[in-house]
Length: 323
Image (cartoon, rainbow, N blue to C red):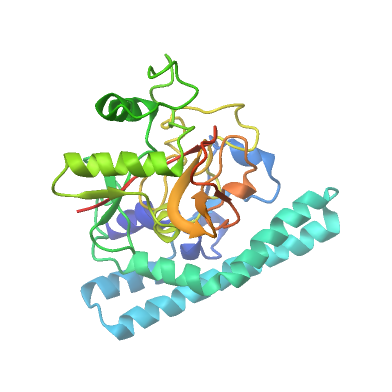
């Protein structure tokens, strides 16, 4: 049972991946979007027995010694993955006909080197979170715990949809997105992520939710919280980016193969998501959109921000809850 729990909860994080025998690898035959990149592996390794055992040991006896032993193993796992990526980069330098493939892998390798300590710490915080238990990635009220973040922080299962945003418009009289018919939501887009909403619109929506729920505070996630909730983008994930579709899709289109570390869906591709983190006078956005390259959708990509006063047709938002 422990093996099943930790696999379903944690395998989506790259930091748990180790070099294992082919017999322990599974290939997802239904994954499609990675076909657009030769640098994306087609298999998802299982969590190894050593790491699983150390997680179990810490849960039974959460001492500093057990925590440091687990961190040491996470470092070993991470460095094995990094070595594999470096080898792939060297292979591409010898064989790739398209320089863009080399550039793509070089970005990933350099990012892994520069961000090593942060990613290891993120993984350790997930593995040692007291909320890690059976069913932690199954939502009961539309929100999921962000493992490794503050214990009262959870994140919405999906981005805010047009259907949900319409209730806010009706209740407050706030101006609707510009692609709507006045204040009326167009037919057929109820389950699509709402876009053409500024950062300030998104924050107003959160404040509206908070006023309706006296037991909780709703807000936009910080960049760090968003990354913690997403975890590393699964190798064989499908999502709406990189030529998969030519426009937005419903938020539940790719739920089978696009589940994040927290259990939330649609965190990569489809529509960028506002965060509360500032980058100069701009606000950081995460996750990519339908018209982004797969590489730009990576959780660790930190190169995108937007004017908080402007609405964009490929930027929406997701809510976190403190309770």
